[in-house]
Length: 55
Image (tube, rainbow, N blue to C red; front, side, top):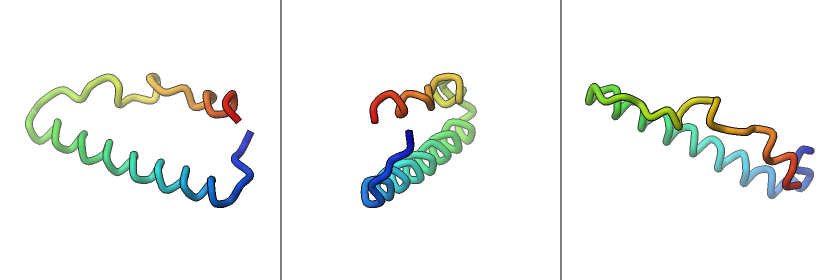
C-alpha cells in the first residue's frame, strides 16, 4: 500500500535518498580501507514488503 499523504511521502523519499547516500559512502570507506563490506548492506537483509504491513 503506497503512502497517500504527499507530505509524509516526501519525508519518506528524502529519508530513503539520504540513507542510500550514506550506505554508498560507507561502502566506499570500507573498500578504500580493504575492509569487507558487512552483509547487512545487501538487498537480502531488507524486507521491502514490510512497509505494506504497517500502513
